[in-house]
Image (cartoon, rainbow, N blue to C red; front, top):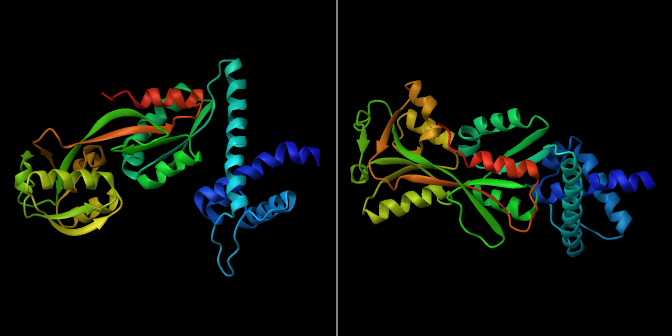
Length: 303
């Protein structure tokens, strides 16, 4: 019983916190390499041990909703897990070894097109360390960082928020993409007014890049025709390729498509067509040495 308390208990707390953060029994099971049944059993074991109901049960549904006791238990469990991680980090620091796992959440456009080279460089320099990368929407990335389920978040147009520290990364240049054969496809540069009245494939309204685009169009009295809205860049690229309309995306996300001749990539003339990118973390969190090294690497521009 003493062994269970000292070893398994920390793992059980992690399973519980992952369940709350991910709001899914299946995802919590996948993250911890166990079955959904095992997740349920560990939650019940915690409730039996502390004689408190931690999750609300709704017949016929596996909804993850904390009871008041569950909320307290979740917050305190986060502190225990943070202290446990810090213990490992301090021990590694004694011998000057940079290792451990850095949990990072980011949006698809950054994670798929900008981070792979950075992660490879990091792993080459620090082979004992690992980057655990998750993809999500911006709002979820910010929430996961604030909740402590990930150590770092990487988002576009990071907004100052109480409790968050933002470290800038190099900006992304935004470009116009068009189907091959479109009237603007052969242009080297396009001004904002040239896009007035054009059919556009847009990001959904809550995506930061869409918000920035809307502000620029409004400031220049430009109106575009919304043909479709999507929440991820890959779907937008496919829609443009098959002729739905134009789109504005980060240049790094379309380099391969341009080489393949799948779509036209046109530079935008005005200097304000850039996407700021930043690394976010909780201000009150003591970052691991590996996380700090990764942030340093992310702040350097690739040449």
